[in-house]
Image (cartoon, rainbow, N blue to C red):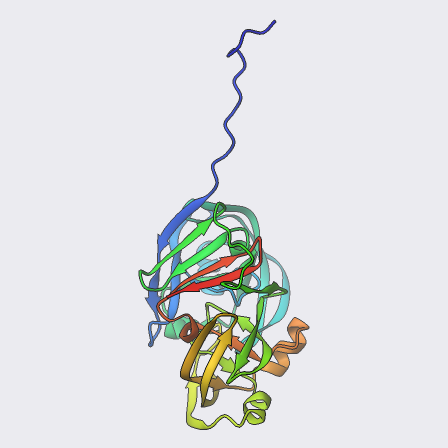
Amino acid sequence: MIPVGAVSVPAPPRAVHTTVSITRAGKSRRVLLVPVMINGKGPFQFILDTGAPTTVLSKRFADSQHIETQSHATGQGAAGEVSASIGALDSVQVGDAHRESLEVGVVANFDEIHRRIPDAAGALGLDFLRNYTVIIDYAHDTVTLAEDVHLPASNESVPFEIGPVLYAEVKINGYGPFPFVIDTGATENALDPVIATKLNLPVRRDASLGAAGGNGVNTGRFVAFTSLQAGPYSQHDGLILVTDIFPPLRAAMNHDLVGIIGYPFFGDGKVTFDFLNLRLSIVK
């Protein structure tokens, strides 16, 4: 007989629950940067971007870190076509949240982001974020990645789906719902011109800015809306960017999306993305 206590049973690993500070960047301070360790080095500043299917690095940063690539691919970002080489990282870490052997895109046309956000080394995408519940506290400039926090299915949260990116149903001035991308990397809400015309939304001013995802400069116009609503959450009496980016986005993502929910919708709230239960909540 083996005496009691003679066999040591290892304790189960603790669930990750880690919080790091956000640095705001860009002209409007609406781009959220988080500190990321890459291959054990850093931290480096990355855009917190649920609108990015995969984590991407700027070519300048990849070259400085001697990160090699093996293949080439093209994809569609919110501001146009993105050309990338495919590489692999040994490790990516945010606070205590850690992933190994992560495939990433190395993006050559990152110049526009560097012009507006010089400190951005890349964008932290869904391939990393979806492994945790992500809690963004806009009022206190923190983000928490947790394995031990989940949202119940209720009328106080919004269901979303994950394709290449996040999608949720959104109403505009009470009409819809319409499929929108939920994009923490977007500095503005955005809308397809067809829907803006159909709803007869009044034009307020022209626009030229890096909008959703920051991969380039989008031109368009701002139109006014009375309400923008996702489940129980809404934004009232605001402006939304009308831009022609949506036809190529629909083709690339194989989804009939017509809009993007970005920074103005989240405001100064605490936004929780529960990727296990596919629920979103906003507390203001």
